[in-house]
Amino acid sequence: MSAAASLGTLLLWNMDEGTAKIDKYQYSQNDFIKAGALMALGIVNAGIKNECDPAFALLTEYIDTSNDVLRNGIISGLTLAYAGSAREDVLEVLTPLVIDCSISFQSSALAALALGLVFVGTCNEDVA
Image (cartoon, rainbow, N blue to C red; front, side, top):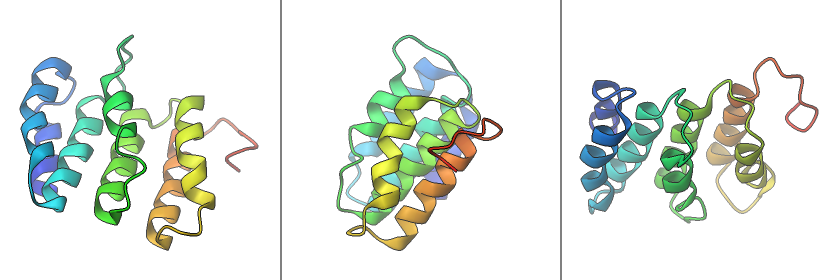
């Protein structure tokens, strides 16, 4: 997972080239490599504001997966891409994961942590 995710740091803020280079790892048979690629997408798009918003589109595409490894990679990617942004659409995606009892406790806890990092300093009552 970490090797695939490290591509995100190598290609930080280079959205076009980074997304293209990371894309091939999303089709791997190994779930840890896929999860790392999803984290890398978040890292590449960290702090970038774009009308197309590829990180949100690509990461939320897989959010309903039953695979905990992939779900944790998606949540981590969303966290890294939108930390401190206070985006309401991220709240709408992650809140159901926090309250869903059918997924693992680890995924629910990670989603709660992600919401805290995305809404840090906002005093948002829904997150608190």
